[in-house]
Image (cartoon, rainbow, N blue to C red; front, side, top):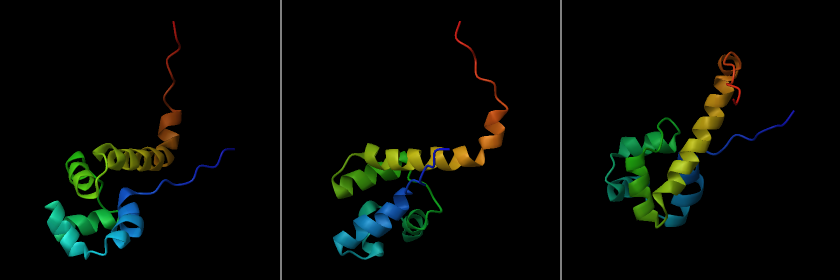
Length: 98
């Protein structure tokens, strides 16, 4: 059986890797992003996803592509949901090619 590691939520990546390198307080980062402090804290706490709108802002602030942030979120969502939906998905028979 293949073991798959849990991908990192983009909020965790922001909290553990990106923000410490900036030296900025989280409230300052939220202000620069044009987000409420609570919105940023929800992302950092992995309680909220990075949406396309937030990804655009993160990409602009940190000088990377919005797609980077969306890919992190998509990978996290697919693996997390895949685990939760395993039984449900087994009940769906794939179509056979003609």
